[in-house]
Image 1: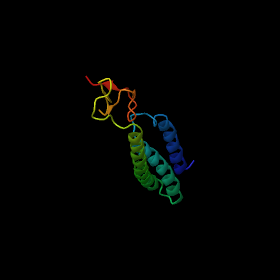
Image 2: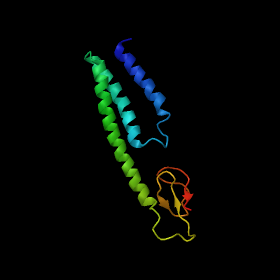
Image 3: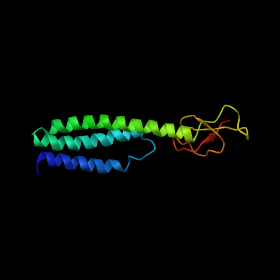
Image 4: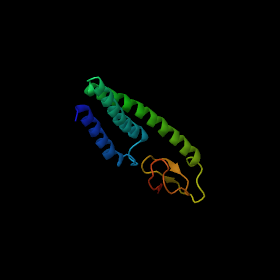
Amino acid sequence: MSRGAAVVIGMCALALAGCESMGTAAQSKTTQGAVLGGLVGAGTGAIIGNQSDHAGAGTAIGAGLGALTGGLIGHAMEQNDQKAQQQQYPPASSSAPAAGRTKFCPVGGEPFSEDVKYCPNHGVELRYKE
């Protein structure tokens, strides 16, 4: 087996192992895009670099460009999601709700009306302000 094929197999194994944890709430779409873009770019760079006897350089260049591109795409997707969530779940107004209590997100601190149970941005259960 050639060195380039070994690199590609290794990158595929890393990609498959990393995909299981990619959907966690703790990771942003920017991070997910950068990781996946870097893996795809590294694999592509290794294949192209292997054809010109520069598999290591091709892998490094592909990983860098893939991570940058994936991160930019993920960041744009994240901003679009945030805009859509803000339109769907606008923050509570400054006037007090009917029951007199306001809920807030313990992670981001955003205020919400009493009828919202979970933060649409962070997925955590909202708490009441004391």
